[in-house]
Length: 163
Image (cartoon, rainbow, N blue to C red; front, side):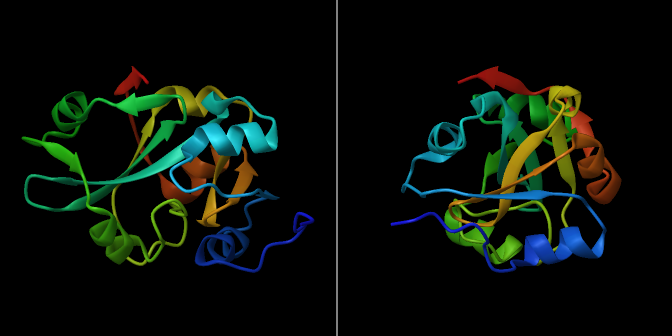
C-alpha cells in the first residue's frame, strides 16, 4: 500500500493553521502499542526528537498534558513536586480520550477538546525541530519548538527519566 502524502484535517492541524504555525505532515504506518520507537523508525528521525503527548491527572483528577522525549519517561514524583501537587498519574485511556477528543496513540497537544495546563520537558525546547502527534494515529507533524512555546505557552519542567 502506498503511503498517503496528505492527511485530512484534524482538530490539531486546524489549530496549527489558525495560529499560523509552519508545519510539515508526516504520515506513517501505525502499529498498535508501537509508540515513538515505531514512528521514529518509520520517519528515520531520532526517537529523542519524537515528542510524546501524555495526558495525566493530579490527585484531584484535574487533567494536564506533559510533553516528553520519545526515548524518556516521566518521573511522576518529580512532576508532582514541580507543579505543587501531591501526586500525578497517567489518565486511563478513555478518560484521556474524553479530555482531549483524540484517541490514545493519536493524542496531540494542539486542538484539544478541553483546555489543560501543558508542561514540557525543558530539553525539548533545545531541539532544532520536533515531531509531535498531528491528531491521528500514524500522523506526526514537524514544527520548531519555539512555535510550541508561542501557541501553547507550556511550563518548563525537568522530569525526564531514561526509558
